[in-house]
Amino acid sequence: MDALDKLTILADAAKYDVSCSSSGSDRKAVKGMLGNAAPPGICHSFSEDGRCISLLKILFTNKCIYDCAYCVNRASNGDMPRAEFTPDEVVAITINFYRRNYIEGLFLSSGVVKNPNHTMELLVDVVKKLREVERFNGYIHLKGIPGADQRLIDRAGRYVDRMSINIELPTTQSLRLLAPEKSRSEMIAPMGYIKEQIAEYKALSKRFQNTPSFVPAGQSTQLIVGATQEVDLKIIKISEALYNRMALKRVYYSAYVPVGKTEIATPNQLNLLRREHRIYQADWLLRFYGFKADEILTREEPNLDMEVDPKCQWALRNMHLFPMEINRVPFEALLRIPGIGNVTARRIMASRRFGPLNFDSLIKMGVVMKRAKYFITCSGQVFGGIDLEPMKLKQQLIDAPKSQTSQMSMFELYPGQFSGGGASYGLSV
Figure 1 (cartoon, rainbow, N blue to C red):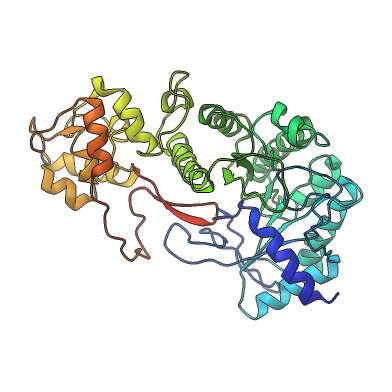
Figure 2: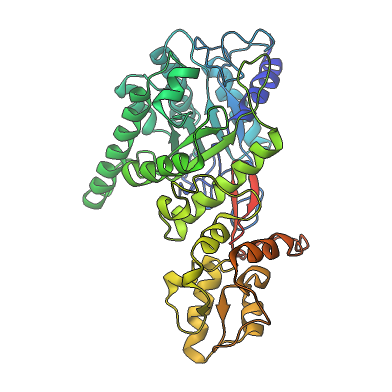
């Protein structure tokens, strides 16, 4: 099988892995080296400033010794054509694609062949040759192999910009059910080690100027949604714990896609994709809006509403806090008002120093009034006659006209716009 045939198979097999977006790495151009990674990063969709970024996204191999029920590359899936690169082939393809301006970086993952250590050694060989032999200075995102020796994780971390260790399923119980050959502890342990090494190298860099970097763009992970029966509250609490304990840059979510023969029973796929979207929105509230998992959802209401976004769902459950006076409430309270995003809240805070705001001012600042009008007052005035009874208000939010899609600005981050999982999501805030 030639390299082009392998590339066709292994690029297609990699499409189910969604853990690629802005890198956050600042690898500047260096004389005598090829490429660079700018702070906006390398991804396969849109960056935060509206640019389309490309990278070579492939598996080293889709052969795998494991038979995980949710994975398209599972050992028992006889319908899947199999292929395996050599390290030199991956290096050659990456450099050739870069020289032709097809890509700006590499995203490399792999099935597990023989054992985790053997597979990780092959991946380390790829990134080492790219950096030391080809002098490639562009962005590299590598998927670490759970169960691989810590020394291999350490070696890889010295060459790559970002590393991911996928925990795949939300709980130990679900992993035992669908992937009994894998160990939860083997997934968590390397994440903890990477966190410690990142902190150690950052501390050393403050003392010694020429300290090498270690996973400078941080680490991420991926959760599959819908293959097992966990409620959304469970998933969001797990993500919250990973952000707090492992200092992850991102948790990515992937709606389970049944491919080939499978015994996993799933609901309508459209509902799973909508659920994935809502979980991304809830994740955004965790990371940038000051929410806790137990605020977004509760034991009495453990799942996200498919009809309204998570912030509206929270607001409808806490109507005793509304309406808020837009000219008086602090920044943290502004972030909790549906229709007001992080950027817009900062604009409001800056503008209030020069005088009170009215509804026209808010519209010009980018406030989504079709949602915000139900939850705010301006100098004591409400936006028309509004019934604050939660059920009636929810129906009004659902019935609100959808805004027209417009061209994204290259230079301004619109309130609530973000990229997740290889697709651009408009966060309803």
